Length: 98
Length: 463
Picture 1 (tube, rainbow over the protein chains, first blue to last red):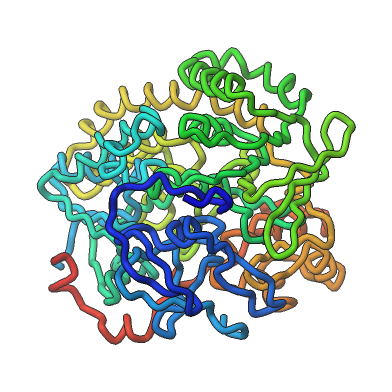
Picture 2: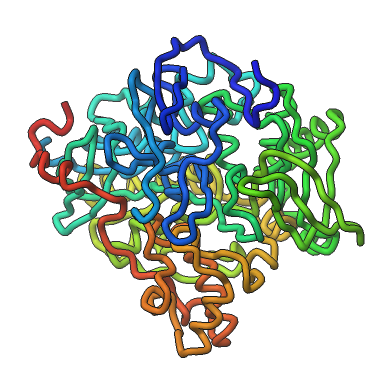
């Protein structure tokens, strides 16, 4: 456990699967909420805004704010509305995309 | 799927209670929800989570299982992970489920789309690490993920609940920065008589405050001039309280100054809304059963007016009774007699609201923020920008879209709409009602061409 990370995962005994975020290899709990799992893994900036390039991370966790957008197979999706699955290849949406 | 009698959008307390009541009266029901499992936000994922950490989350959460179990009744189809993006004449719902579009035909529609956090634009609220308090609760409920070094900022009972849950989990907040003032509390005392009828809520609140105090969590009250600072992420909360400037270093900030009805779906079909001064938000205009001016549409729960989970469940049952009567499944006399105990219960549950609404009002500086504060998170439009549009003749929120894209991002105004109305109303010296709100058009949520191409006109949607 890394106590320096902003978030702590109480753990639910889920098995870990391989996921990449911006090329970084992560092991995340399978079936967990993707935004929550990324936060627990220490990732707080999910994207940068198209307008000013400002960093953003999850804000509402209920599919309303669209601040937690990540790019999955070229499509921007809300991380808080997805579950972790084996082999997810995640990237920050390219700045300039809306 | 075949045409159902009643389509319900939202599987929170209002939607689930309505589904069970409607099915009991013989209606076929399809309940759609964006989440993979039923519960809404208040009972999020309760069936799976209650055995894992029900002790930490408390009885007010675990008792949601009574409602989720009701969805097992014959006649109810629960479409999980279904995002409704249009409500059309018919009525017909267009939704996306597992990457495929689908159409649901119904005789009647009930919106149970719940609440959103009231936008709380303070300097720095867009930084990573700043989240709605409800988001902190969702992380804890659904995922068992806790903020190690968090400060809770704002006002309202939800802040005490999340603080107490964090204490129980062994990760108490670093501090509570509460914005309600002594005057707010004094003003609320005139509602105390009514609130005592809702004594269970008050007792519950006092219990939470005790837990927070025993854990040694520092509470600042009457806080103002709040700003979140940090380079690229939240690093500190700055504020003034008790006449002194404070700065608390932290990683996470949970903001909350109340919740407001999520009116997007209702607005998209033209339901008229009016300003509710007591709750400082727009509410749909409804009859006593949740019926709207749109013949096929009812609304129940926090999406109708903020009352909390228990009120929402009762309102859902009342709406279901009226819908059953309208569709000829029960007699009007049956509807009326079954409604009597429900309305009595509703009065009891609502008794505490005027006290809470007055004791924990929204933070004035977040209703009418400083010029440099971002209002529209999606398009990064500031309060000063909106004021500038007003000086150029912008009289309503729809025009702000043309002036500077406010409300045109993917959240479609969910987290800026009320702020834009407030600022324009002040600048133009107009009422909130005269200022109005964004016109909401489908799609209510983004839909991809691929999902449209995979549109299923019915047969397989429920399978």
